[in-house]
Length: 69
Image (cartoon, rainbow, N blue to C red; front, side, top):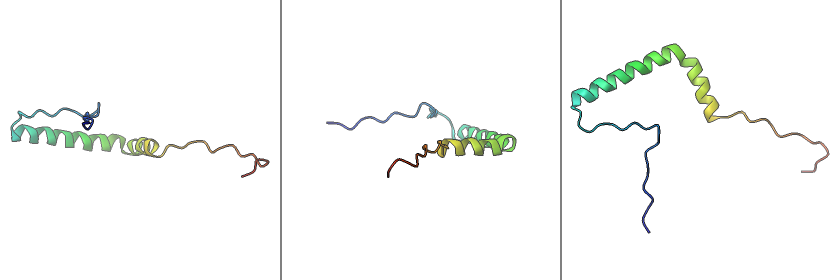
């Protein structure tokens, strides 16, 4: 019996392996600049969306005072 093969997440990008170190650095710098711009424009909204994904706010169960424990 063999172990199941792991698949990359659908959202995980495939990184080319033929780039030069300079090309990889240029992409990393571009992504960092994009991250900073997104945070500046949407920081609080991004935090709230992330919080909602991590800690969903389910409705509390209905309380029936006549139901035993």
